[in-house]
Image 1 (cartoon, rainbow, N blue to C red):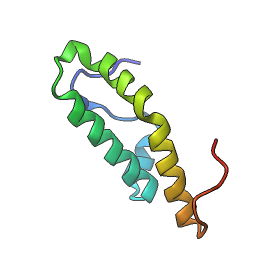
Image 2: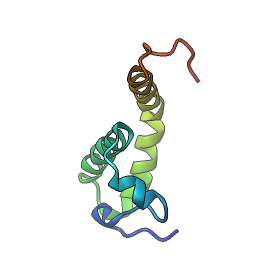
Image 3: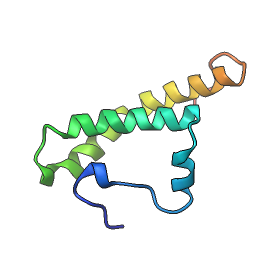
Length: 85
């Protein structure tokens, strides 16, 4: 998939576009994480950003998954799940 160099021009193709329009807690969570990654990438030259983005995601994905799971469980009326995936 060809992606523009400028993260401001990135968009999800197809049905995800309609999902991005809905303001759900999941959408807000994803938008917040995208903003964090974009802010981090601003300190690097354009040619390094793809590699740096992947490294950042690899380093932080587990923590963000746990945070998202806790928020999702809380919205369902339960406390954080005792089962970690």
